[in-house]
Amino acid sequence: MTHLSASAKHAEWSSVDAVDVDTEMLAFATLADIGHSDAHLLRTNRSADRSAEQWARAILEDVPGEVRAALERAWKVIALGLAPVGTERTVAGWSIAHASPDYVLLQTESTFGFAGQLLVRRSEKGVLLATFVQFHDPAARAVWDRVLPTHLGFVQSLLEALADRLEQTSREPIAGPDPR
Image (cartoon, rainbow, N blue to C red; front, side, top):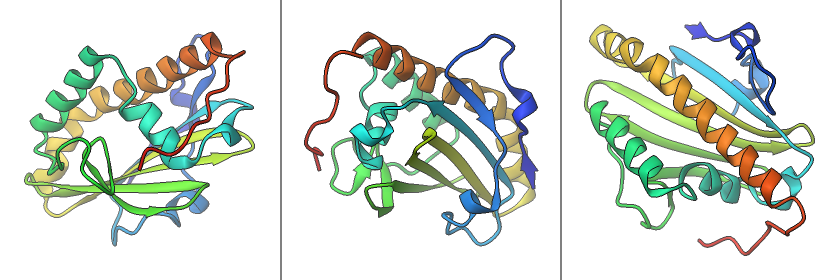
């Protein structure tokens, strides 16, 4: 299994850090055999302002149109089986496997032979976004290895963009009713 270490952080300081995947994070995943995991933490003292599902929507849905289109293209390239946006019990087309105020676990399957889960978890440290992947065959691993740098760049940029939005709205309340 590959884990990305916190030493893979960007050189310049930001409020987003790659963090080590630990056993506590892995306990949220329901995949039988995790072959890849990575995690990023948006450090904010505003994590209690939203539920975990609202944070997931802020990260994956509340983005500019060109970002949303880029995400959809990337997910299409790796053949993720996503529901249409707005479908009940989904976030950005990812099925909600479990949701509580403090965490939401999203999941999907790829026709290339792997399953993926995204964990969004709020805590006193901030908002965590972790990715877990289970490979059903070696060819699926090769596909993932080719897209991994793009995945990591997307995750970092999505969280940095959210950090920028939080900074811009620091005087405005960001909590609202959960749309689903």
